[in-house]
Image 1: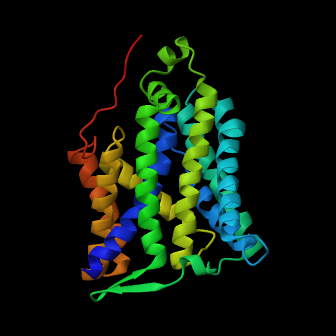
Image 2 (image 1 turned 135 degrees about the vertical axis):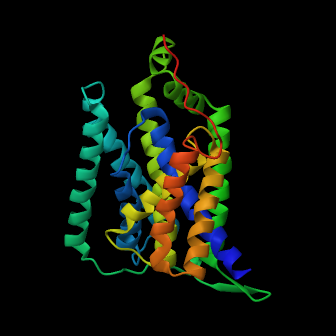
Length: 289
């Protein structure tokens, strides 16, 4: 049962990471690797602003605003000028990696590379339920993941923003003809995805501490979970995150934590070869005009 408890907690984090990347990837098809810094930035904002006169909720709000601003700046300043250029996807991929490395190194200079703890009474505390131990941050993480899943499902299916994101994803030209403001919708998608990533970074930081390099490996886990689940279904992403969380948790328990990454990418290779559209089986639709 303790393994199951740890699995659920880790699933909630991987799901948030996968969903954060998916929200941006869906309308843009950009491999936004500098998204990893949104994870790290929010955690360090909480670390920097904690200990003052601000409440923990105010600190988290500021951290999420910072993550959203970073994501939107990436789109407005770097990606948008390249959109439509020759080999734009490759250029954006390399650019995003360079942006991440630059800001990650700046963070290392400012705060050094040592692990910094995040602590607050709201996230402290342990519970024992019939021999199964939970921490408060684990329970909060699970609740946050479920709430964000429900919110995103509502957003996707019931709001104009969600429908616009889906329309841009399926057919950018047709959506433009129908008057959907593509640039504004994409900017909002970057903001939303960055907030999700920031929330994941904060929750993980309260559980394990923070380092300047924490974001990149976490982002890769999220990308793997998204690929496993498929890029056309929120439920698929949730299942993909569950598969990856189970594989990582069980490999750490029965083998060793050093095998976690090997198992992660082995599963990715298997899915790319035998089920490239993920567990949802949904193909990305392309409509010619």
